[in-house]
Length: 602
Image 1 (cartoon, rainbow, N blue to C red):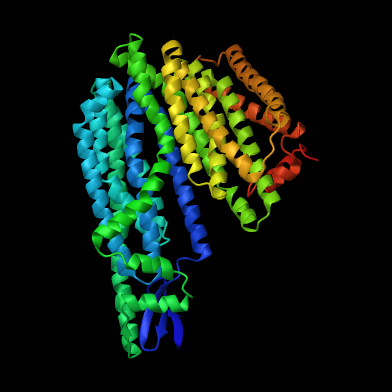
Image 2 (cartoon, rainbow, N blue to C red):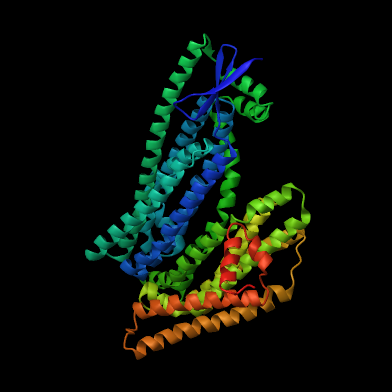
């Protein structure tokens, strides 16, 4: 078969002329495009998560601990429901769209997005109605009526977020990550802006905590609406561009005396040209007849992804349905329970920030592991897994000890008073298990054990529930913080046990516990001593006011001193060698050069 290739000027497509016929071939699946898309999505995810995490601090400052407690009671429930719509289905949609596009069947991809948007739109409407009407029932399960207005406010977001997630999946299937990235950042920005505006207005008008918290939750609906508007704008532009492209292709075919091929002919031609690369998968998809079969195929692919993504939010949801009920049994009224629960959650944004950093950093380790596994280099796989675990173990330990030691000045700096500092110190320990569970889950998935991390996290959620019922009645929210730290450590331990078996890891008590303990002790002394010295110095100079300014100075200088001492102690104790530092993807070589310039390394 004779054919020639060219490129249309008005769009990022190539065409192949086969005799008198023209076939459209997309070139979006190049490695450079994929890498650029991954970087765009990663940057957008970091920015949006950072905005979403840090917004909790001004919320508490404006609304108080009661509002903060109600918000943190309802939001995990909302997150679980949104995860069902926004986690698995975009992945399934992107996969199907990519297959149709690769086979030259653009109409098939658009059929997928139309059907999935309808399904998710109906799903969102039903879940929204059930959430709104079932708010009193959920309030009784939580054992607190103050959460009912916030649950009803959360229902509004289901009108927008599911359809938005479907459109994101469509563009990701086209390997165009920009719409998803823009909508993610704008969604979080609008959500936080609306939340803060409503908080200020409601507090000024003297509304009660339950109504103020509902106003804050409404920010999620506003953010979802903004994100959906962005995706619809991109969709309209995409359809307009595709229409122009189709006209150009018809004109190109006519100028060559040919005609545009049918969808089946495109698929047949592409199968011959690309040596059957997509033949089996596309043929299976092309045999799906009608909406019912396509919907079933989408569900089959999306549901396992949803179940895996639900594992992490379930740990926070455990607190929603156990801690308020257990606190109420200790004699607190409903308003008092929400205040205590809000104080308990003060440390949550900081722990989430540490875990978000760990999740972002984990992406640096996976490509080298995947390459080593692909080449069959078993020893290199073992070394990469061992190095990754050691990095994140030390990161989690250092973050936890630093936050625990500096809990009081950090608490005052962020929340104006020191209530709940002890609970924050215990919650800081969550950073250890959280960081290690994140990297170990990523390593397991890189080695092909995809479902195991989700199963382990579900086991951790069950342990969290059991420990809450055991510890909260006697220790209050301190018991809940201890239960959280233990649950994440369990998930990390289960992951590491499986990883050790798959990768042949050998862990020693000295390397894991004894050597880090010395570095951590030095770090704790440096951080606490610097914080105390800063407060004493400011007091002697008459500059200390006992409030946020002096607490901020003590916190920031304490963090800097602790981090510096820990890095020096870790290098001197050979917890991290120069070769291992240099092996850190992307960050290693510049870090080694910096430490050499400071004469830490010789």
